[in-house]
Amino acid sequence: MKVLIVHAHPEPQSFTASMQCHAVETLQAHGHEVMVSDLYAMNWNPVASATDFGVRKNSDYLVYALEQRENVAAGAIAPDIRTELDKLLVCDLIIFSFPLFWCSVPAIMKGWLDRVLVSGKVYGGQRFYDRGGMRGKRALLAYTCGGRDFMFDAHGVHGEMDLMLRHMLRGTLGYAGFDVLPSFVAYHVPYITPGEREAMLGRYGDYLTKLDQLKPLSFPSLDDFDAEMAPRVRDPQVTEQN
Amino acid sequence: MKVLIVHAHPEPQSFTASMQCHAVETLQAHGHEVMVSDLYAMNWNPVASATDFGVRKNSDYLVYALEQRENVAAGAIAPDIRTELDKLLVCDLIIFSFPLFWCSVPAIMKGWLDRVLVSGKVYGGQRFYDRGGMRGKRALLAYTCGGRDFMFDAHGVHGEMDLMLRHMLRGTLGYAGFDVLPSFVAYHVPYITPGEREAMLGRYGDYLTKLDQLKPLSFPSLDDFDAEMAPRVRDPQVTEQN
Image 1 (cartoon, each protein chain N blue to C red):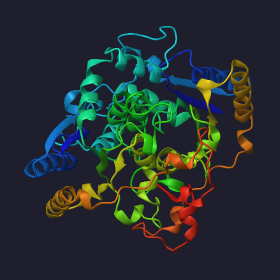
Image 2 (image 1 turned 180 degrees about the horizontal axis):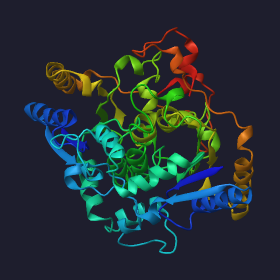
Image 3 (image 1 turned 45 degrees about the vertical axis):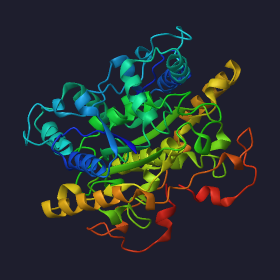
Image 4 (image 1 turned 90 degrees about the horizontal axis):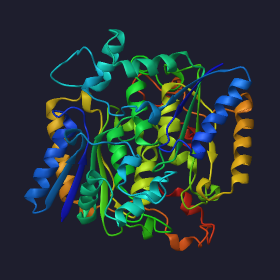
């Protein structure tokens, strides 16, 4: 299996960075090939802009998604995007490794999504969810946060964590066609002991070696919608998915 | 009323930019003072890093939130953050104006949230939701997207839009203590006629002049949780909030 780890943390000694290193070691020890995009170390540019494009379909008015399609096809997309896109297209599994910033990924990682998940290859037209361009690949989030687990359950003060991350799990990864595996969440990280951190790394390693046992999250099938994206059957289950 | 509009779009001629301009004109015409942070025009740096801090509580290991608190107190936070923070602290209403990128804000705007919503002033300890630092201020999202409105209702292919935006509405703005008003969403923007765009601008102007009639979204009250954030009463309603 080819694995791409996209990692972002401003502190190279962080526990999130330890998780990323542990993932590399564990996956390599199990015979997988691992690529790492360490966004802070790469000084990744997160800002989607006209400078991403060597050619322009419309030089007077920027429609970012249209120029992505045009420039990928013409081989004229910015080299930093092309490098990441090549890693994405060959990987079987992508892992996003990050600390939760405002119930989402840090901006530098959001900019990886904005710039690398290009229209045309990843999605476009009616190719999304089970018709998305990333069909056949798996994706997962592995993140750290300061809060405790019970604060993010259905009765917790913040409600379910997967609902907070819905824009990532469903709106981004599910939409792109990935099989999205249940996330690995390291809770309460700033406040736990070194021993508890070791135990958490152990659990992360176990999780990574047993991915085949995990059931992907459930998202809509486009078979249930017509060409105008109107529901074919008003199935109340649809609203209960992630 | 003092209004801060934080705007981000890579195309200055975009419809999103027209909405931003229309908001400025409409709000000024009604006697409000308007500040605009146009993040692309400002070449805003979205990457939270050690360079944001003039002094360090711990120079060997970066805990971003701790250094935010330390540096704001010491007057040593990066000048670009300080400028935005000053606008935030004086405003009565903040408007986020953006095109939806992957069911969230563009990375450049995510980096405004990561860097400007500083620990200590905006949140910290048990100051969040109805005890958050932004209590008494209002916030709203005004955004454009390519999809149609029915694709983002409860039976639509993507489910409810407010659930996709939960990380912003609840996890960020609600958490910080803002009264979060229902969003203004401009659907299907790339595909509509100039006349339809004009009508949409008109609706946006109406919306902005009638904000007092809008009921803020509902979030938990910390009164319902104990000091450990365990629910005082297991009230199933909590899970039904946004």
